[in-house]
Image (cartoon, rainbow, N blue to C red; front, side, top):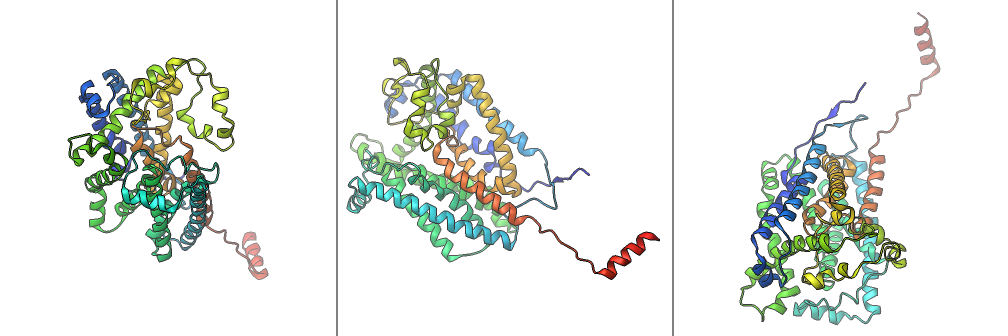
Length: 450
């Protein structure tokens, strides 16, 4: 008998792959097309190189990615057993597993941050310097970033904090736990300090986005009408909050330097700065397509996690195996753009690595995988429920860079796959063994003979 399709649960448009892309890609593409060369030079101290044709190519690539993800997510899911292994539905065994996983992931995250702090201390960084930096709010040059350079395979464990927040959010939605709340607060504070001291705003974003996505989807599935309404309207509320958060970080990252060099009020400066991160990413992506491709170049940005893996990175295998870049392909940002805006564009990155056609195929495959993960997230299936919130971070940052392909994502993904395997096992129904007595057995035999 063919298993019946599983009924899809309600979705949220802005959490879907196509919805997430619609939030940022169309407005930033239109803004980039609207700004002329004089605007680029005035606001971002670089010339405008990106062409209308290139922006249309980016739009086509995003349309392909979003369309395939939407089609795959809409395919009915078939159940091969008594029911899907789910995270959100109730179950004491799942709750216990989630809580135990949180303890392990929290411990690993603390080990990573302890190594991060030890790396800075070994290079002479003192607590006083960190406090002074926090008080002065002047981190334009990122002076402490080099001193906190990571220890391969150890400080990477700080990224386990992403997996911890994902699992902890699900656990807290199922059962209140003060100790777990304290652990979450600790990880958030550590990420906040790291994002400021290390000029690494992404460290905070990559734990906030998954948590918001999980809470919003849970509210969408909940029984409270107000919660469902809030989940649908979340982008209207979150957009101003995200801008305020961005502006707060930009105050220390750049305003302390530019405040004496511009007549713009800070809100205008922050808005132009935010727009610049996207406009210059499209511009840099075009420059990379024009100047960064050459015979013998191995794919890099699209498979960055491989080249950043412990051991491979230390051996410098990419530089050894890939053809050396010609003079025209070196220092592209220094020669043609502004190194301060160094995002190279995530949508064009696969095209740089594999050519335009190969890049579109890469994005099509990514769309199929995203569609599968979103379908699982929407329906509560373990792998999708755990991994799609991280994938959503990559979707929102796709105009700037390929987040999914970076080595920083690997520890969280590996940990969540392990948690998914354990959860699936804990949700598996136990086999019932029926023992029959001798008289019952005889009755069965007698009945069979009549």
